[in-house]
Length: 158
Picture 1 (tube, rainbow, N blue to C red):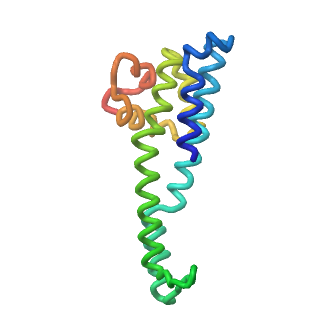
Picture 2: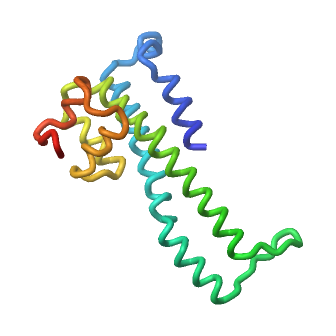
């Protein structure tokens, strides 16, 4: 659902729309970056809360107790729940890495070119630490002329 919301907002806040809506480009960039950062942070927190390691720990506990959940007259074993949770987690990881992270970095490159401090602020809002920023840029848009400002102050091999 959040992904759909981000897509809708992204379409609404395109630069072409900004002129028609009489919205300042800078404000549009701030809004877009803030929205993308908050959604990304929510996905990352939910993904981390259900990490593979935690799921395996819960699965072992459930297997020991032979815990079963009854739903609609059918018994779902803990193994079934584990598989569903794993699939959900894999899907969330894919959405984060292949879609939400790229969307945020594209917004930052488009609206905050050369303004690393402002751009990094939104990356931090998304839950990333400074040491993670280079990796984030590398796996989304890669090192290019337009993303170079995000590496400012860092060595190329970072």
